[in-house]
Image 1 (tube, rainbow over the protein chains, first blue to last red):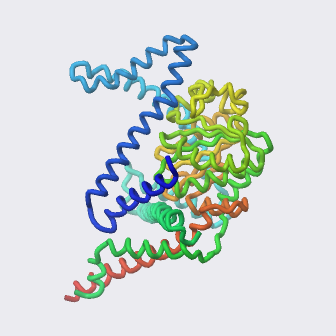
Image 2: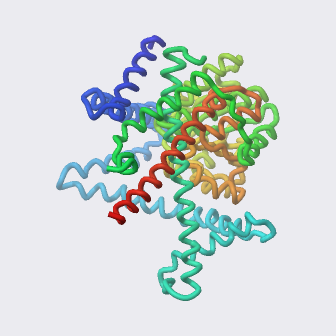
Image 3: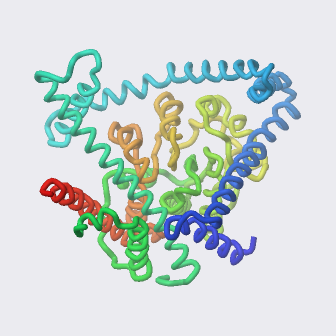
Length: 201
Length: 278
């Protein structure tokens, strides 16, 4: 597509989306929203088929004659039987297989990540950062004790400390979300001011 | 109605108008505020600098158009630095838009630097990430990648991918991600820990808290966080890009948000106090 046409289209849709915040809900915003959803879905389907499904079928079945690969294809198609009442139960077969394989991978691979995370928390308490780190881990774990009463005695104090650590974490996560969202707005403003109107270039 | 109550009931659109103005000023006229480089970005930089000419890195494009502002500058500077060092780059789109958003960043850079497609870099296109696919990458990389690159050309017809049989042959995996579940964590679980392939990660500010524990525990050998991380990496490599230019506007917006949060809390405090005294 011509670069100029592409730029003006981008500007038009940016303004359509901004119109919700700067004005109110309106038809332009709805139009842009629908176009976005449609294009995203179409892109996902085309890319999956063109980049993955088609070349796999062409090479594995067409060239290498691995005809047994048709079985997983049929199993995959079973997922769509849920839209046809009476044979809907067939969709449970690939779903069961999928869950089984997923659970298998998690059981086989996740403990290594989990245990190495635990190992990484064994720190020498020779710096303030390390002390805060270890206190944070222990107090938050205590906060999530559900089998003993953490509402009284020394456990309550530790649990309250854990709550403070959690609140600080939520605050940090919120601040990072703000930073990310500001970046998105910033990108659009850079596009409008610098790319379209050539200001501050 | 008191001033505080009026502020509490102000139309939120005013905040957007103010934010737009505050962001626009430094974009048009940058201030050049100083940028401090963090240890995570330094570690990321060191991981790339440790590579030798003709090493091959596997860049996972695990982000979509909603985060191009933060992720594109990271990819751009990484790709440019890799080509400068004669390091070859294999790109894989782990999410549906990943390969295409990466292509629009790296293709012009490759053209500008005279890098040849299939020799110095290649884009393998979109292959949906899953644990099974990552396992397949270890067992049979070409089959996992459906034997083809983005344009449909066969992997065995390109110099860069001809001899790659397993993902463990790559000297470094760099995962640029902003999706949940994180492709980086899947790669860590399926490839990095069992097969000891080093992994460096770039992510958005929003996803940073999710990835940070894996950097702290030493699983990731480097971590770029958001636009700030991209700006730090641009500074470290000396490659000027869009991230440094955007940092003034980002700082201005953060300053405004801090002021608004303080005003909001003061408003809440004084309105309650006034209501009590009434």
